Image (cartoon, rainbow, N blue to C red; front, side):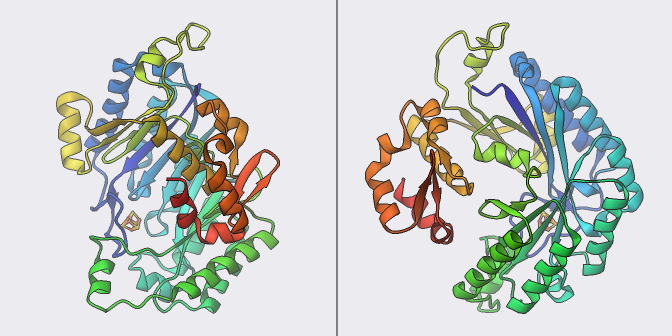
Length: 402
Ligand code: SF4
């Protein structure tokens, strides 16, 4: 059972909706105070309904979106204060805020550093103004560089930057320029995502009408492999399919997702996962150990998406849950495999058998043998992980376990 917890807070507002984005976000000039009030009320309602949850140690807080850099520093301060008062915070508490280079000032960065935020994730996406324009971003390459410089000046020593590759008209040379500049800045963390066209987005409509030409699949693979080689030879450790860091600077919050650890998501559309059922948590003894042996497969729930509906529901009932599912054993196992294989270390078989009372090999020996013969997975010590080829064909590998 997990004795720690992470908190995710979703800010569903952006200056402008990007044409490729299917995240839960609305275009707005500022984040209303009443949205922050609602998030706080939601947290306190969870605690009131299940006080035992506060016995978990707070390991991470992640404020994502949307554009959290639209939240005033006073409102961020309120959020962090209440979360820290609610749980017993670990000494190494990681508090991350996602920021958009088009909506931050140096003063704001100094102010949020003062309130205990110790990790930034900057949505740079590219250092090429052409690529940024194709993506419909509100910021320029100069804004991104300035934002990074401000972050360092404000004293942030744990900074991540996000990139998108496989964009229309983006050449391999331009992508290599992005990577070269990123490496020269020496952020602690770099994430790279290929552009995917999601239903309901503007790009989806353009593609359907034949007005969007993306690089070929081979071109995208070349960009991805090139990034892996360049980042690894620059001293970054690839610890997940899309994530690289200097050792010791992995995103602890995201690792919680991949390790099936507990988190509560607050805000419109936020998802939560608690590995122990409410009943289990309430049966925890004073020494925090479980007094009874019940299902550890977990419960997952998610909030309504629309910010207005969310605020109304919170005002009326304190919670805004749209759905909930209790994972069956098979669902929990498949999720453990899918999330575990995303990590480059793969799945630790001791962890797996502690969680599911059987080793991965007990359950999937023929699949493991087949994938190994195909060169898609390999064993390293006690871990089963994707090979480089397996990473490129990860979706096919995951399907073999379902
Ligand atoms: S800034 Fe981020 S969350 Fe907001 S619309 Fe653009 S991609 Fe989506």
